Image 1 (cartoon, rainbow, N blue to C red):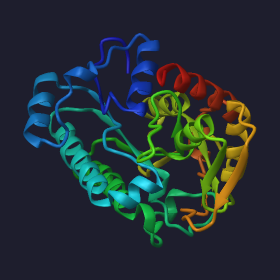
Image 2: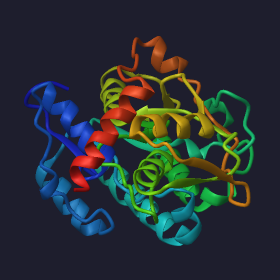
Image 3: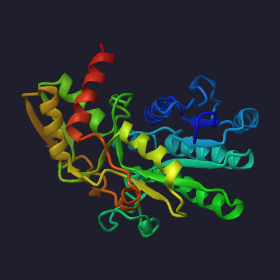
Image 4: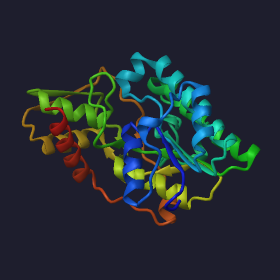
Length: 302
């Protein structure tokens, strides 16, 4: 990508989409404004938009997300929304002239008991975590669709599997928050905090600006045919991240682990050796990222 390139960030209003836009603009690139985006669930609207704007490079960060609570309460909604995002945006981009595309998938697409760290060769080797199965299946469809476009139309469309992203613009609601957003909100509000599960599962967290940088890096540098993991190479237990969020927030109360609640996947750490072998490294530590996320939350929540 270079100045003057036509770039479209689908889902430019999401946490990840906004971060990709920030990263592009920092390089003097001008993606299509988020307020011009079509409704990605409307195939005709998507095709009209893409035929008019003809982007050369497309990032797909569209699609609803949620944590365990949201995935349990609204699996059909999340699956349908993400299936439509993939089915409408990816083929239309291929047919209407996009040269390259990066589709942002989630590490929840890996089988629940895949070997650690998670490698792309493990995809489809077993069942995914049941609490996120509907959402994960939709994201897997997007990954397979990128591969199908590559094989049928010789388009270098990339499926990028992201570690658990957090940062400014995250969802802090009780219904849809992921781990970090949920913990920040709870620690900021309560005399004691109840954390779902045992605290033992390990997660790989990536600050959203690092993820955006990795997405842009992959767009420019990755030439492989397989999906690529985008991660830091550092995993942390839920108990450890809870303790770190408590420190950042200044929480002095009790942390309780509710073992009657689901743990989710026991481990979600990615083998990002391909990405790191190309020269990419994260810029944000977990502590620094949590501090910045908490500052943003306090500023925007009033």
